[in-house]
Amino acid sequence: TRLGEPCLKTYPLEFVDLLRRARVAFQAGRTLTEGFRLAQLEVVVRMLEEHECDFVDALGRDLHKPRFETVVSELILIKNEALHAISNLKKWMQPQHVERNLSTTLDQCLVVSEPLGVVFIMGAWCNPVQTCLVPLVGAIAAGNCAIISPSECTAHTAELLHRLIPFYLDNECFHVILAGTSDLPEIVELKFDHVFYTGNREEGSRIAQAAARTLTPVTLILGGKNPCYVDQHCEIATAAQRIAWARFHNTGQSLVAPDYILCHTDVKARLVQALKCSLMQFYGSDPRESRSYGRMVNLEIFNRTRDMLWRSGKVAVGGQVIEAEKYIAPTILTEVVEPDPIMQQDVFGPVLPVLTVNSMDEAIAFINKQEKPLCVYAYSSNSKVISKLMSETSSGSFCSNDSVLQSLMVALPFGGVG
Image (tube, rainbow, N blue to C red; front, side, top):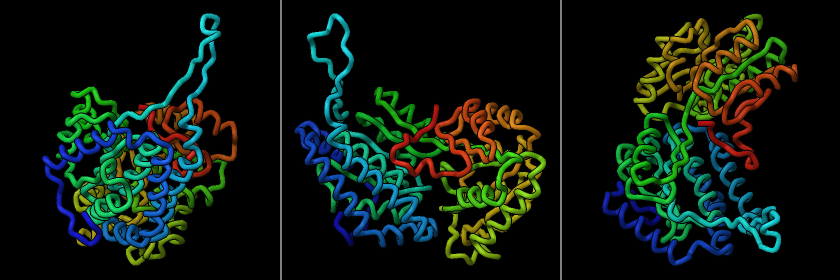
């Protein structure tokens, strides 16, 4: 599709043809050279720079996402990944010498990294550009061809990627398809060399089952419930600001945001008040009128979040909803108990439950009762508290006295424990 032309849904026969073209290109050795990979990484950066306004507009239409959030949490993050890959590509492509033993003293023992082939990347609607293009950067750097399927929930962003990627990247090696969520397992069964999926657990399970039928390796980045412990010994105002920003940016539609707070009973009242002040500072007295506050991606997610909100705890801050605008105010819930719906399901919305514990050990026990989260957050001025939480819980990442920032660092790996 050329720039300016309308985008149509990709049909099954087209999937097969795009996969065939990518396979032919890979088998011809098109992606193997350092020069090819560098050129493709450089045009990814150029595409983001030349079409920053288009991405801002598309994400504004899909998620009511403010320009600052789009640039920081989507575009800069991808550019940093690409620039990091460009800087390190030569080193990554070199064979790695390994230690020899007595029987191989005279031999040359190497680990040689080679590309897998054609990878299938499925993006998520919560960060629709990042979850498509960050894996693409990795695929390009490793010498793979790729087919990308942006989320159908963010239609304007999906259509923009569908138009731009063929315009900038190699037309035989890299393709974008527009497919529905229900189509993805069938596409996975076409047999790729690796599948990369970001999204919810239910759909991730279907993707993994489809991939298993062809013994295709899979990387799953799935949502979960990320706990945030607030100790009685910490700077409450700073903690509240950082937690509120992390939870409510992108209207709470994030895989790495804190999902719930476990705070010491002694600081609950001060923390809730500090969170309320932070929301006032960020979004004013009426967040609906704020240009810095987004909307839910669609009515399905809106209804699901609203229903959980209404059936859980007590609203301490916010709680207003407007269905016609897919608007849910930034909401703090108190008096939440573990059986409440908000604690039993993944929450992709602007709702933050506050639960109380009487000790750090109680918080650790609560966290360890749940499935292993993507992130654990801890706020305390006591380094022993931080060390204990880090060593006695298990998660994909751990961040102390801040939130989300660990996922923005290109030198750190990202993913769950499984």
